[in-house]
Amino acid sequence: MIIVGLILLLLAYLVGSPFLWSLGILVLVVGLVLLLLGSLGHAVRGRRHYF
Image (cartoon, rainbow, N blue to C red; front, side):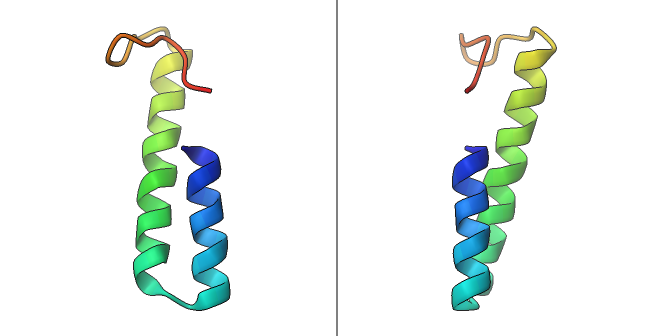
Protein backbone atom coordinates (compact mmCIF):
# COMPACT_ATOMS: atom_id res chain seq x y z
CA MET A 1 0.00 0.00 0.00
CA ILE A 2 2.90 2.30 0.67
CA ILE A 3 4.25 1.81 -2.84
CA VAL A 4 0.80 2.37 -4.36
CA GLY A 5 0.47 5.58 -2.34
CA LEU A 6 3.83 6.82 -3.59
CA ILE A 7 2.90 5.99 -7.18
CA LEU A 8 -0.38 7.87 -6.81
CA LEU A 9 1.45 10.89 -5.38
CA LEU A 10 3.90 10.83 -8.27
CA LEU A 11 1.08 10.59 -10.82
CA ALA A 12 -0.80 13.40 -9.10
CA TYR A 13 2.30 15.58 -9.25
CA LEU A 14 2.84 14.89 -12.93
CA VAL A 15 -0.82 15.25 -13.95
CA GLY A 16 -1.74 17.98 -11.48
CA SER A 17 -4.81 16.24 -10.11
CA PRO A 18 -5.84 17.20 -6.56
CA PHE A 19 -8.06 14.10 -6.32
CA LEU A 20 -5.13 11.77 -6.98
CA TRP A 21 -3.03 13.77 -4.51
CA SER A 22 -5.61 13.28 -1.74
CA LEU A 23 -6.07 9.62 -2.60
CA GLY A 24 -2.31 9.06 -2.62
CA ILE A 25 -1.89 10.64 0.80
CA LEU A 26 -4.76 8.58 2.19
CA VAL A 27 -3.38 5.28 0.83
CA LEU A 28 0.13 6.16 2.03
CA VAL A 29 -1.08 6.93 5.57
CA VAL A 30 -3.12 3.72 5.74
CA GLY A 31 -0.10 1.74 4.56
CA LEU A 32 2.14 3.34 7.18
CA VAL A 33 -0.40 2.66 9.95
CA LEU A 34 -0.65 -0.99 8.91
CA LEU A 35 3.15 -1.22 8.81
CA LEU A 36 3.38 0.29 12.30
CA LEU A 37 0.74 -2.02 13.74
CA GLY A 38 2.36 -5.05 12.13
CA SER A 39 5.79 -4.15 13.45
CA LEU A 40 4.42 -3.72 16.97
CA GLY A 41 3.05 -7.25 16.88
CA HIS A 42 -0.64 -6.41 16.65
CA ALA A 43 -2.50 -8.66 14.26
CA VAL A 44 -4.69 -6.62 11.94
CA ARG A 45 -7.54 -8.64 10.46
CA GLY A 46 -5.67 -11.88 11.05
CA ARG A 47 -2.37 -10.77 9.49
CA ARG A 48 0.75 -10.02 11.50
CA HIS A 49 2.81 -8.53 8.66
CA TYR A 50 1.98 -6.37 5.70
CA PHE A 51 4.72 -6.34 3.10
